[in-house]
Length: 147
Image (cartoon, rainbow, N blue to C red):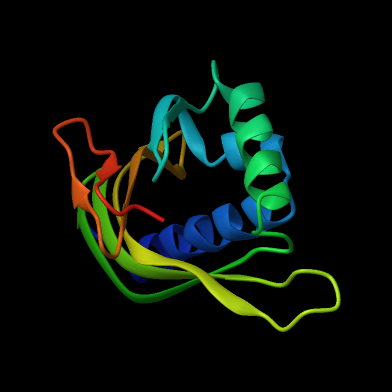
């Protein structure tokens, strides 16, 4: 049976992910996933455990390439729970603030997530990014016009 506590725990996971990735807390980012969890990003795919260091390098490269001081924001969160599995869809907006410059929107899109409850904790099995202005390829990557 789905409870309000499940929805709160899933929402907390979504927010913990944002806080971790914005702080470049790569261990915190990886802790949001199951051991076999996969992140299908706008640019590349990362297994949360095996590719953690490669994801850290990718995040640092994005920051250096014009997306410093990133802040992820979510809206229109829809959660569908079926036992110990859940699907979540949400829209995201990433704001970047270069030093001594005004903040600007760096990326807009949507997440489609598959979650699993593991030992009482909700975790990402799969998180897919689709940026506005792109199309999803067969493997879940954003293509043609991805930001």
